[in-house]
Image (cartoon, rainbow, N blue to C red; front, side):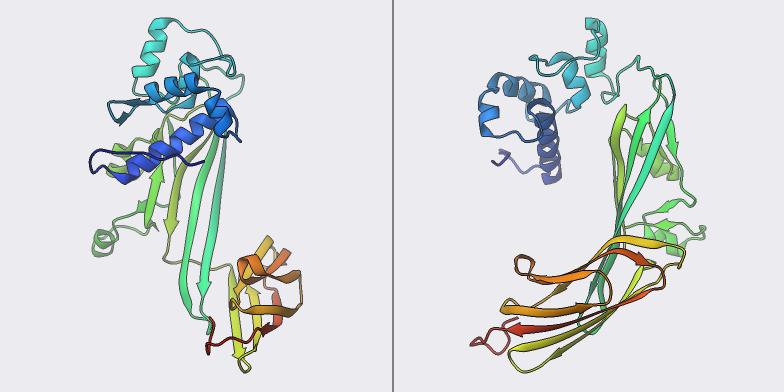
Length: 313
């Protein structure tokens, strides 16, 4: 099943994709995580109501699930409490539609998780082709009322690199791009690079970011690939942990691409497990626990099926 959007004019594609993603999130909240064509066909009245509230004259409107649940309820979704019509109208048309007023908690708690992923692409000679860090900041807030929060960093974010390098500002965190939850006040962020927001109640993603410069790679990878005729390739790989020996990495996965005409591979590793997975066209090496400053070796003899071409890859 596909969700598509049709337009009569040339519109911003990012707006269309964001609306479709929000629409999927809304449908999952009402129809379940694994909704299908039959569940949508059986709830066409609900679908029409959601379309009417989330889109007016071709412009996306209210896509907040918590607010939609207050006045679109066919029995499957229970409202938290009954609100007066005037309060409901203010909630729908207000500037802060992601959080309703009157929320109370016994204890004010905020949980923050920063999840980062380091992506590294190496050539067969060990040259770094691409390295970047993608991260996201997940929050779970249980706060009373309408609090204004500030998310601070040790250094200020630097996005405009040309002005940064020619200026006299102090060192900061250089990022290539970032996206924020709609609760973040972009005006203050553009002015002084502080992240100020009134958070939604519960779990949400505050921001995403990407960094490509000054990356301290956690691992050093030294590959050695040797071709032995037309039907055999020898691969030797050494992985060295660059971080402290007091730390360790968990669930490390190394993928080594192999030619498409690979028939089998004989693999030996000093730590963990490795096997050839044809569906990924790669040798996948998995290590549950990788200690800092440790070195691990992988050697593989890959047998290739004969082909008409000189190099099938």
